[in-house]
Amino acid sequence: MRSKGTKTIAENRKARHEYFVLETYEAGMELVGTEVKSIRQGAVNLKDAWCSIDNGEIYVKGMHISPYEKGNIFNRDPMRVRKLLMHKREINKLYGTVKQDGLSLIPLSIYFKDSRVKMQLGLCKGKKLYDKRADAAKRAADREIDRNIKSRNR
Image (tube, rainbow, N blue to C red; front, side, top):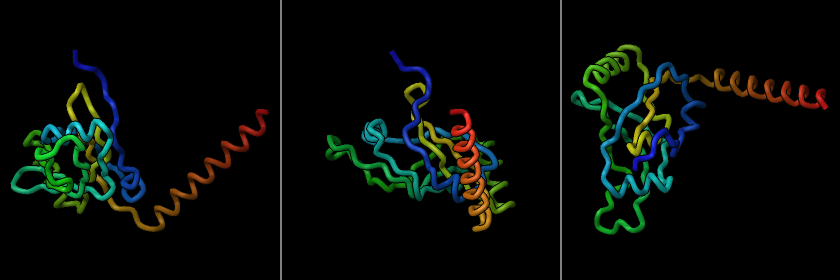
C-alpha cells in the first residue's frame, strides 16, 4: 500500500535568507532508482542549487544527491543536471517572468508526495544587504518580545 501525505526531505534555508520568495511552484523530478533511495535516506543538499530554463524545459543545477552506498554501477554523478517536470504553459510563464523581471528560480525544498519526489520552486528576487540586516533585527526583536512575555507569565 502506498503511503499518503507529504514528508519533507530537505529544505534550502539559505534561499529564504538570500531571496524574497514571491511565488512558489511544485515540480516533479526525473530521477533514477538509486537517487530516489538516496533521497529517502536524506542524502540531498540544496544549498547552492538553482534552476534554469533551456529549450522550453526546466532543469535544476548545483543540487547534490549523494551516491547510494549499495548502488554500485547504477549510481550516477551526484552533481548531474536533473530535469524537472512541469506543464509547458507553466514553464513558458516562468520563462517570461524570469527574463523580463530579472528574477531567479530557486529550489526551496524536496519532499515526498504520495511516494513521488517533488520539488518546491520559488520565484525569487535577491535581497540587498540592508534587507538581510532588517530581517535579522526583526527576528531579534521578536525573540526579545517572546522572552519578555514568557518571563512575565511566570
